[in-house]
View (cartoon, rainbow, N blue to C red):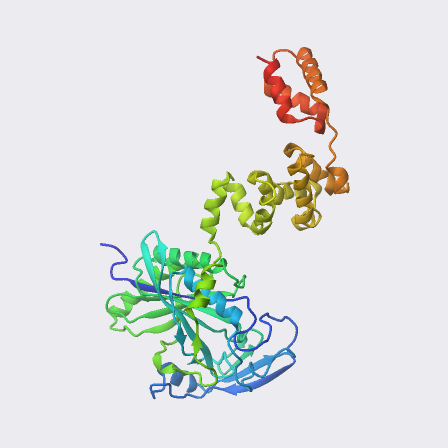
Length: 475
C-alpha cells in the first residue's frame, strides 16, 4: 500500500513577465531608493458577483487592519487606483499566449477581464485584475501527463515592506507587473511528480520573456487526502522542498482527520517542511467583472502568427547541440547564457566544438590564467572579435589549431589583424625538423615526438600536417 494512496495534488505557478506593467505604461522594475510619498487605505468587505461576501474577505475585514502604500515619482494614478486602467499590455499578452501554446493549451478567443478581491491589502484597489487566457493543456512527466486546467494573465501585488498585527506597509513599484498564473488539475498523486511538473513548467517559462531571480516566480500546491478538505500551501521558491513539504502535510491532514477536523485553509510553507496557518481558503464569491475594460479578443490569425515564433525549449536545444557533436560539459556551458553568441558564430563556421570552446571554455581558462573575471575577458574577446577571427579561419588564412593562441595574443594587447598572422614553417622545413628530432631521440612513440616538435616550433606549424609526417617517418 503506497504512503501516498488517495493523495490529490495540483500546482499553481505564478511567474512575472518582463514586459512593463499590465494596465499602465509604467516600467516594471523594483527601486531601491527611498519612497517619495505614502497613502493609507483600509479593507472593506464587498459582495462578489454571486451577491455573497467571501468568507476569507469577511475574516480579514473584521481585523480592522491599516495598509500604507509607499510610492515614487514614477508611480502613476492607475497604481494609486485614482485613474481607470489602460488597455492591456500587448507584449505581456503575447508572452502569455506563447506560454499557453508551449503548454499545449487551447486559447480562449473571447475572455472577460475580472476583478479578484484581495484580502491582505496588497493592492490599492482592494482587487487584482485577472483574465483567463487558455485552458485544457498538459505537461509531460515521467509519471504521465499532468493536465493544465487554466492559464491566466494578472497583475502582481504591491511589495511587502513591513507587516504588523494591525498595520502593513507595501511599496508600489511591483504592483501591476504582469504575472502568468498556471493552474494544473488536482491530478497528481505522488510528491515527486509535483516536483517534476514544477520543473517542466519552469523550463517552459524560462524559454519566454520572464523575469529572473528571487521573488519573480511563486509556486503553490493544493493538497488533500481522503476525508480532508483541500489545503493550499503557498510560498515555494525552490521545487526541491516540495516533496518533503507534501509528505509532512499528508501526516498533518491524517492527524486532523483523527481529531475530526478537516477544514480547508491557506498555509505558508516553512523552510523545514512544515506549514503554518495563514487564512481560510478563498471561494468563488471574490470574483466579479472588470467594468473599465472591454472584452479581450484573441483572433485566430494572431494565434497562428505566434505559433511561428515559439521559442525552443532547453531540452530540445540540448538534443540539437548533441547532434552537432558537443560534449555534455560544453552543452552545459553554452546553455549558461552563451547560446545566442554560439548560434550567431555557428552560422560562420560549422565546427560547433571550436565555436563552443571560443565562447565558453577558453574564455574561462584565460580568465583563470590572467587572473581576470570572465566578464573582463568577454569584453575583450567580444562576439565581434570572435567573428573576425573566425572569418580568417573560413577564408583559409588561419588554421583552426591556431585560434586559441591568437585569442591569447589579442588578450595580451595585439591587434586582431596582427594576431591572426601566424608565422609558419613550410612543409619541407617541417619534415626536415621532424627527421632531425627523430634521429636525435630514436625509439619514441609518435605522440612523444609530436610534443617535442610542438615545443620547438611552438605556433609555427600545422599540427595536422606534422602528425602526417610523423606517422610516415615513425613506423
